Image 1 (cartoon, helix red, strand yellow):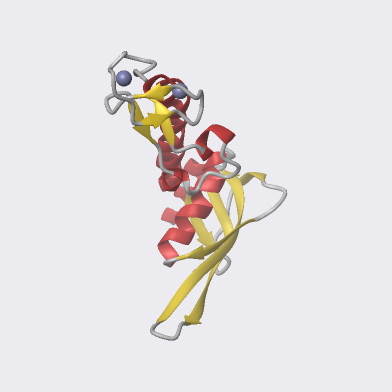
Image 2: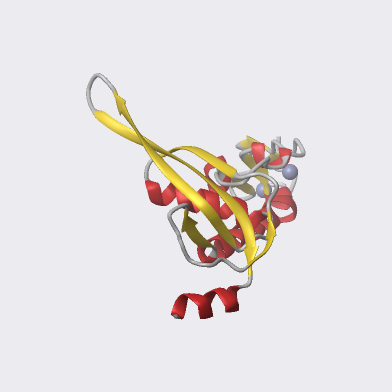
Length: 164
Ligand SMILES: [Zn+2]
Ligand SMILES: [Zn+2]
């Protein structure tokens, strides 16, 4: 059977999105891991094997969106529950975010920040992280969980306040 896209005689994969038979040049792979912070990923992202067309039309925009949110997440202000300063809050989320099973604290915080940025919040307040020791037979490891409340704060005001 020849490639449904470019007619090359040998196909190696079937696109999980549209079912086209595709050759080595036309196949594209997506990894779920690449969207690991994304809450409720769309069904298309459950697939891992794509033809060039489906990847370009459906996966690439998701990658771009994810990268934009990740960039915004890196700017999210993270304040622990021990923060005593004034927080000029404009809007609060109804519910805190909670994350689990992270390899380190940094990863747990980044996940919380991503969830906040995903909903257009620019800060997380009352945040807390907890480390849990896990004992395996061979080695000891730990996993991190965290929680915090996404909010929108007046960044300019906040920066002025924290300069004092
Ligand atoms: Zn092809
Ligand atoms: Zn396809």
